Length: 117
Image (cartoon, rainbow, N blue to C red; front, side, top):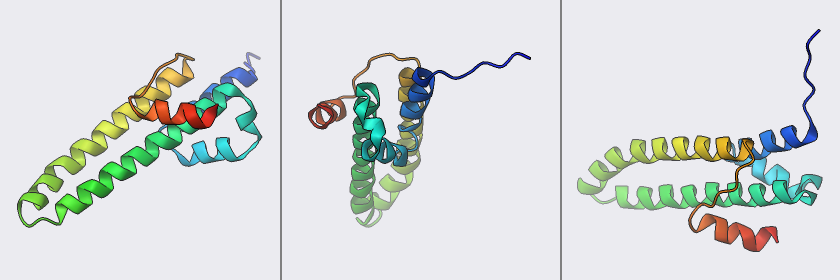
């Protein structure tokens, strides 16, 4: 029987990584005892601000989409591109987090450091 047990470090990395594409997990990390671990706290706040930043971008896109014709066309073209960019970047940050690599997201990491300290 070849069973590999998951160490707490691996499970923490997996949970922190999942917080980027599924940012409700970031809230779970921040609001529970998992925030006692510095790695989890830092990635929880970073993932939360990452999600909030994209919500702000999509709200701005929705406002621009209300402009007749050009706004509709811009939103129609930019919406899928932005969604794809969010997906690719979220998966990239999740991969980096799971591998334990340290990285910074412009603006977002600075905000997160203030709250994670």
